[in-house]
Image (cartoon, rainbow, N blue to C red):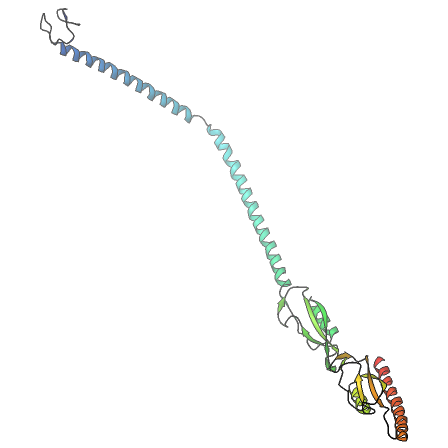
Length: 280
């Protein structure tokens, strides 16, 4: 029900005009809405003003947190500490640079040694030169038939003039006399030819006789060491000489036997004497 504000008459809810006095109800409704809207706006403005003031008060409180006197007191202390720390790092860097320079220089000296030329020097002279250059050495022997190379350095492991480090080992190849001889083939030779060949080659020998009817008298039918083999000059070779027992003339055989015995004694003395000389 709508009550007319003018005549206080009751009207229906959907009535636009009062049935008694003809009052227009829509104007009253608009006025009521405007009043309510104004009230809402005022409430909102009040709420906004309150929030603004609260925020302002909070900001002011935050500004007043750190006292100014403490900040001024901390600044000098931090600046002195950073200066001392910076000076320490500078001095440390300089010290490390000096140590690195010294170590690098020593490393350069230790690894920049020039190898001297010792070829042609005696072993004693060569080792003295290497000791002067702070180098180590070891000897390696090499057999030679040249008498001038005996006891002489004929090779060195590192090339002369090359660079190496301190106490590097240089291998010195020193010539030693070759005391080996090559056995010749004397089988089939006469005893005179065989002994002469052995003597020329500085080979000690021993003679043995073997009775046979198949080989020519006084010829070498075998040798104890094969031809072409290398042996030391102190080793003895045995040659076997044929003694022919098939004779048509007994007297001639007896004469030949006497000559053989004489030759045997001479050859055995020669061979044994040579053996003694070589052993001495």
